[in-house]
Image (cartoon, rainbow, N blue to C red):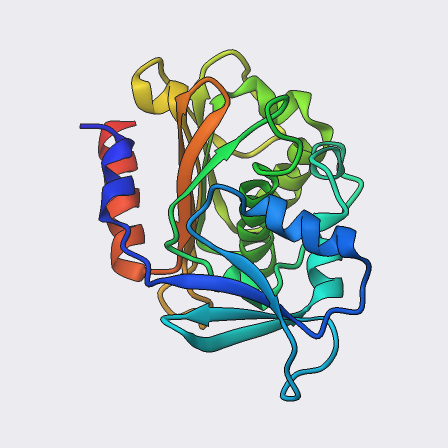
Length: 252
């Protein structure tokens, strides 16, 4: 049994994205379609008197459940690259997820990383940083994150700074991966190292706030099934997140 089993419990409703009344240039539509190419989220366009220009709609079973300005998607993901997160050029507080993307929780994505794709994996990178931001803002609870190789925390300047800042709060931070780096005593995190499938192939970020918090728990889980091809999802489901954390605590 591995973390891969959690991929099979996800059962999202039928969803799609529609850009209403687009006046932005065609490349914006193309970028959005490319972001979700080969994913279970069709992207289309429409004209509607109900919505403002350049409004992105999230449809669930045919009904609109969320809307976001196209400009928000451009700022959050369409016009950025992974270096923005790796180098820390975008501050943690500046990480925002448009409602139409946030609403895709529990959708199962299969995404390629660089160099096969320059954009697909960005969706998971954005959500993982958003969960880290939630932990920082709450300032309490626990944050558990897997990096495959622990050295990535140290090698990626932006990632290291994020976890240094979260660890400065009252959040109980746990890092998982193959043990090729040990943080200094001044970096107050708990390290879990190993070489099993879960340590080598998983990428997860899980934040559980205190029981009395108004913030919901959040989790992202992705498995590298092939070289640079990720299968994953994110969720806000309390029960599923509790099961995921229990598995991690007892097996990793």
